[in-house]
Length: 113
Image (tube, rainbow, N blue to C red; front, side, top):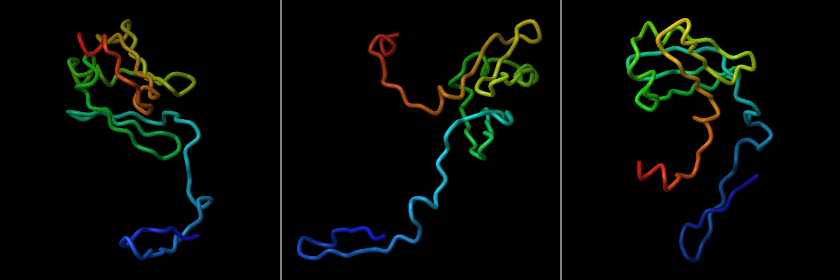
């Protein structure tokens, strides 16, 4: 397989592609394997080997919580959410990994807040 790149207005140069598209791995589903925290990020390891780091500043309940409280999470049975049970810690929140993998259009009403 080759691709074409314009070198100038008059000539074209072709480059060989080393691997076909079928040689690449594309994720089908995002499932949580492990969660860890550092001072600034929540790091999500997915079952397919991907790593996703989310700034704690994006999640006020986690950003403002004590580090030991952040560690009191549970991974949901379907492995798609991280849950903090307020009966077990000072945090009452749920984080869906899908929210951090899919871009969303901004809503004008959200921008005005």
